[in-house]
Length: 389
Image (cartoon, rainbow, N blue to C red; front, side):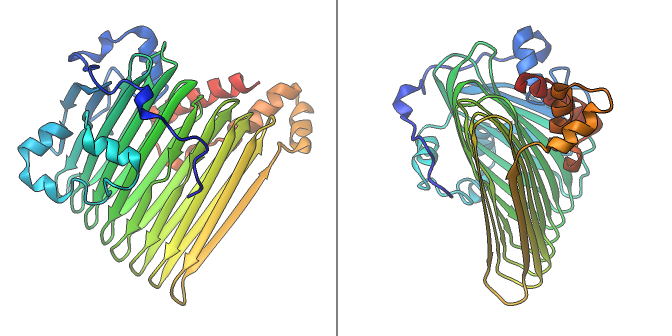
């Protein structure tokens, strides 16, 4: 992955003493904070949700499970409850990967543990939120997800800061294990602030016949984000798809991509990225490596430059055996003038026409979101499109 533009001085952030009080009823959260949570896909009403986990600053604030087929715990509680969890904890991610993983290894604030029961089909999504209140607060979390054999679940993770927070640091390690025939749809929506630094480190391991669908949405301002999850398709017939939608306003630096390693026959991988800059920088690396046959992979990155900014697409395809099928397409440009003129001829002014095209470019239909979340994301994009102009 390309070198990050700016290193982070961890000593500039508060890493002690910001524990949260328990929040029994999420509806009692400050109204402005509720909106920030909604803009990260989190429903404080907890309607049509199979469970909720909320971590605020340095500790768990709310944990609720609504169905018996899924278990949700704070990671610290899970480690105390299950000795077998040591077989997963720090097994996919090396704590010495970089100074950010090491920071979590040395000082863990919390995080979530989510596990489905074997064969369970979880109808409604599980939602989790990693939330920061207070300027210059640093947050270290470690998450573990285990999707047991032949089970299915959709997890919505919203990461956000409070309405009055400008500067903060979020560091997260996520280790995801999808067992034989399991399916995980993982939708991550970030709603940060103008001086927020973000360093997630994620590894996903998929066994035979498993499916991992990863959706990532960041269309609000953030200072500096580096996100590059690695997916290992280790079992025959495993499938992975990554969809990302990125908007970089002036002052934002986003280094966001995906890496997929196809280690077994009949595996398939796809990386789809849509990026817009309105003055910020987007670096979009994508890497598909195929080490078995038959295996198929496709990488697609498209970017729009609406105002002076930078989009740097870096597609990488790596085949190590004869017979793999890998492809990519990348395009960076501007809104086509003929498309604007076409819409203006039908009654829209230039700004309305451009905004309509941008919303179409940021189409999330491919993500397979449940209707309620689809509607919420459409509203987020609508609001963001208005801000761009």
